[in-house]
Image (cartoon, rainbow, N blue to C red; front, side):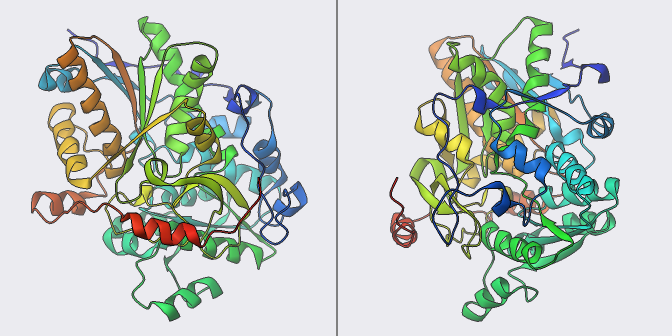
Length: 452
């Protein structure tokens, strides 16, 4: 009998998060205040973030302790299993060994609770009563709604309108856990009303939803803002994924040659790859690949420069690969990947050549997702399926070159609340849409000029 899963005990959950800033050859440039274009300080961030998270955001300490209350909640689904994809390997006829972590075992069905729980915890400790946030496809909004339940906080979620309409069950999950959910752009905030006046049919974007959530938090004394990706502390919390995976590979005497993750804002890829990138930075031979959609080609077609994290320009400017903060992507079903930029940490690592990037159309993504579902039985989230098509590409290369490599990816969530996307694919309704170069140039031309 072949062994399929590598399972750790609850006692083996990591007790510390790994901070890659301690090992990066070049740190990201500092965030800049949107009004002064000067580096932001803790006081600037304390308007919408608790000090516990601000300290993590700027820390260069390699290991940061996970609070006991957070660990207690992690035990509800962590450690997550490491699977060997035997049946997928056979279907591809590859000599490669394919492994994946399965984060769909969390109550919210994705990797997002790994950071929503500590973020809610630090806000609770700071005396905050309510958290405002954005969500694309709903994975992050669901995770934050759940985490706020654990710590007695209220949650308000601005959900990208196209996903609000495409994915009603995620909205219902958020509401079941007590959250108030608004389609974004909404009539609740000045940012949302301004956008709807200009375009009543605006499908929304993560940048717009972030603007609404930040405005909500900044204008209510009892409310803080929470972000599901992009920021340093978010990627820090997600390193439990990669840290567990390293332990699991040690148990079976193996180590990845290639680490792959889908990439929208960067929390999944960062959390999966950073513990392995630590080894790469110190000389290990390893490839790390970010898989993104051709309709939102941040790393593959964006520019590395300062830009706002939101559409309205309320956030600090961050040094990122960006398509422009007014970028409104098409309504692809991988709503969690529809962000105009990526995490500064990932962008710096990509800029330094430590990470590669590839982009795929959604028809090839769903073709790979169905191949995975038919072989490995799990129906993957559309976001996660971007990693799967990259895995299959690399496994086919191994077959063609006759090389046995170990490929590892994170299956960041299940797709059981995304079945309308599968229905559209099976009915032949999905089309590939490559975001036009001229549209990218138009957005980039509007960016603020910052001398660096």
